[in-house]
Image (cartoon, helix red, strand yellow):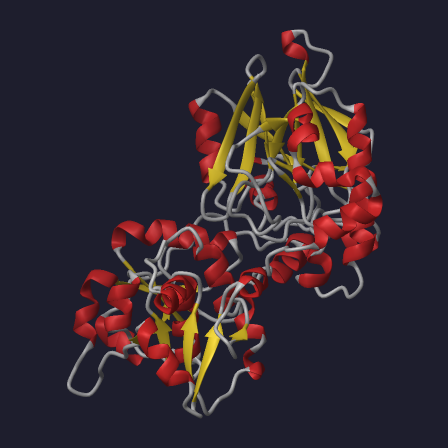
Length: 479
């Protein structure tokens, strides 16, 4: 058996390519949309992709299963559990007419790719239709599972959060029933041997849980003993309290992913190839209508940028930042170095932002300025100046950390809105006030400051964030 994890650091997402080396057939579990990576990896190892499978309808990225089925003719294996709201609606919508080769899966079903058997286990709680796959390598003579593709059910050190149907998709009252369902699903783990490996869909940094580990895999036995969420499942009440407490605010784009993965992501047929625009075209863009995504470092951006541009460097949080601060209906223009263009395009299409209308070479951005068109800047404020500012009637503080961080300590009077939810809560902000924007250390607040400036707010980014401010109050060094 051949198995490789293909890991996306920006989304903390893991896809799995599993192949039978005897027959040369392979399957991809939970692929992202830029599927050329999986095809190339398979070919490099003398495999051909004949199938693709989903553990559930994802919230944090757009699935590549439809793209793979179009490109390779792969058979699609997806869940048929859950009610009518949780059925895949694109299986009969091939671009040239007809249906994709597919199999709808229920608990206890199984299928094989070459000599490898995949047994389906219904694991609801994170979502109603969620399934996991036990992997049995009959080619090696095994008759018990080596591992389990757990999707968003079991992570290393955590479980998939059961609140997203309410907090991200807006289904009021859904989180506690989902938590009760997840509790029952956890009880079913007792039937699995300790040696079964856990191959999860996410790692540390994913918003699909609150304390995912940075280790790529584990075992059922280890997680049973040491996973805090599983250990909390000694009784239902304690489990519900534990699993629902402290979950991070989900990025705004999560709701769109649920919808699009259900109805069917648009078929790309390859990576978008946006044109490079000239400096004259750059000057003519209306950034109140089109989203200009400036990927340069913050110190370059804050010192001078096209008015209305968003500061979204290609750092680890890029997908969550862009998915929360760019509207899906907007055309996108990238300010990006040529050597990072491919990466930026891939990251955007993975979260459904396909309307990439053009790009400008970031190394030439200085040419934008003329006598009549000047860069915008964003002010910064030092921690020592905050106290004098906030006593003024026209100055306020916006804390864009998570609610759990805010509760641990905050600047008195600060409004708290996580930066991933800011676009949906602008009506809570005063429009006649200058805002000091801060997060823990200054990264999230930089993204939020550029967004607010685009929306017409007067902002200053707190240098060093809350850590620097707190240290200034106690005369202790920032750690």
